[in-house]
Image (cartoon, rainbow, N blue to C red; front, side, top):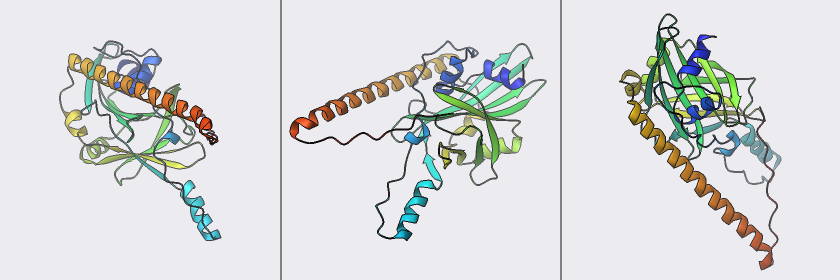
Length: 273
């Protein structure tokens, strides 16, 4: 078993990352199993630029086409019920190593889960640092990911495994200077390609990362309470979304009675891996 696999099994981040690893039978030190939170939304459900108006000239049409194929920036924000970055530590008895990870979940402006980030610090005979991202569905896997702190040179990351509600991508062997840059930086820019090959960059805020990474690990009881709040919030949002969909469907069914003809729903593209 590789050291990376041990990390995945012994130290699973909270929130979204916990849901994915839980599906694989992972175990987290000092933490009971938690219910599975909502899945990250497919990347095409995230922020999209406004559709350009139909141009009157050929030049305008070209600009409109470029607007739909050029890079897309998605600004995410911290999960509201997770008030700060969380540091969790545990032991790997087989290798007499201590594994700590600092993690946080992120959502869209509409509060939908988007991605999660975790930085692992393994101290033992095979000490190393690893960054892992839980990415949404609907992305091309073969190109992998690229991530950079602010305007620094990007590093490559590869996808390791996918589940019905997200895919892990990671980079093993982080240098200390990169972790130091994360502590001082403003954002991590995570670039991927969507189903049509369009570049999408998630802008992940780093505020509070340094304090958590250098600080003491969270108390297990506090961690459990934090996870419960997160789960309750996700269930609340899921219920609100269900009610809105029901109201929308009911309204659409009633529209023909008033003499109108409802417009056909746009066909969505199912995520593929």
